[in-house]
Image (tube, rainbow, N blue to C red; front, top):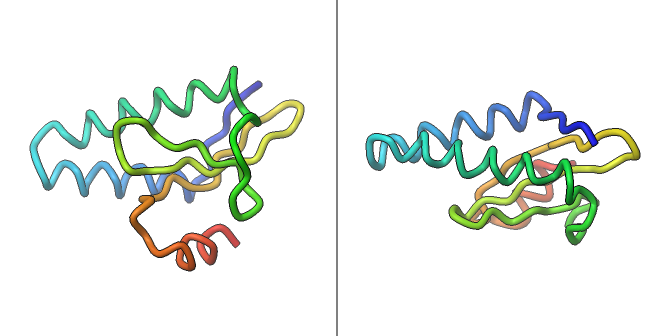
Length: 96
């Protein structure tokens, strides 16, 4: 399957990069490397994750982030990459 990162999810990744880079130099790059590795795994494992708020949710291993996506026969579309520490009501609103 082909993975598509939608513009709003790209912005989530950029925001996460800047947040972690402000914490420590180089940590933002590590954040992106870790999240892109998780996203690439969806080529093989897309669609197996539990659904939350009508999206599949992949929980990242190294950072408290979740990748929200939808799977079709041809594509995995990434809708959001969000911090799991956010209020669930905010996450729900963001996805709808």
